[in-house]
Image 1 (cartoon, rainbow, N blue to C red):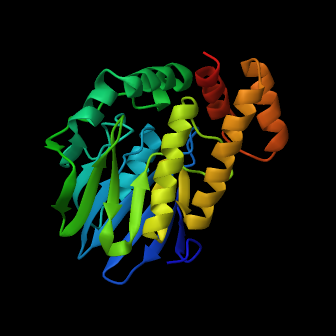
Image 2 (cartoon, rainbow, N blue to C red; image 1 turned 45 degrees about the vertical axis):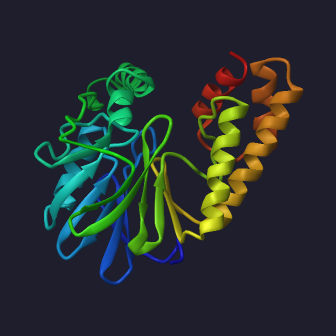
Length: 263
């Protein structure tokens, strides 16, 4: 599946790219919210499973309306635990560590920060997890998924469409990288994606990407580590990175990355 082969649907605020795999369709909802959230719905036989909910009230309403023709069988709540106004009666799936990440860990800190930054338009309420899941295969809505637990939450493989969901990639934008060891972990993960030959890589903050994009990100991360090793402080690091990647988005993520490398 080519990442640029899709049907485009414009909504009032967001937009949807629909990838047709035959029996299965992937609906990639670009929220156009202040933190560039992306939400995915996997559809089969009139049923849908959502991967990662939106977290702004207007997006929660808009995506709920868009999904009205389908029976939503469940929502995987991985790295984004906020937005509980979205499909409150649907089954919510998460690993135990993902639930803890949103309730009391790093995810909770991010939610509190976003609530402070965006105010009443941001839905800071947490999804109540109805189904605690573990690593391995799970079938929801007649679709098989493979869960891989990560340090913070979990990733989701969708074998039927040869795709995988993880938190962040973004081949032309900065990501939150918590130091050199974290960068090495992401590099190893992306190399594994390339080895396994996924058609699409789905992430929370970008439209679907491919293996060429994964290699671009690997090169960026290797360079990020090298720049950090040559710099004495966060300001120098940020200046160097911005100079080398002038067109990259996600400058707020670069700020956070600098804080990790130069705590």
